Length: 199
Image (cartoon, rainbow, N blue to C red; front, side):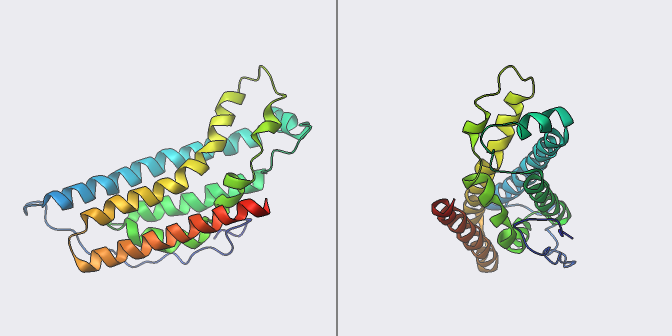
């Protein structure tokens, strides 16, 4: 469970429901289905890379030398170790669901997790990169800056990938599932963007 998640609320109930079985590999596959499987693989592979980057960001926040420098900043950075841990936990659970799902099951995963992605608001609207301006010559700083902007790039990427999946849908049921996931992710993006005025 995601009990320590600051903005995500209670953990999503991870479903034990299995995705419909994929066609036998010997069956002829349409170009749309091939494209759909490639997009699903892209979602999975890039999510693994992204979660690894969140782990690295969490490790930096846990490093005593880095923590000391951040604590001494004249301006607040806008995010905390707890924020990073919450995001890492959320996306680790999402990755676990993506890895368990059959090819083409990404839409179900995003429908489940979309409401919990509001945690991204603190990274998109709250990070104060100017707070790092006073730090010079720190070996970890370049990676730290790069990792801080990863969440702001990842959330819109989900929407783009789901749009590509929707183009490849071959059945009405598939289209409905992807469209529902897409709408939920879009609603999350709007909600996160609306919080800019509150930050």
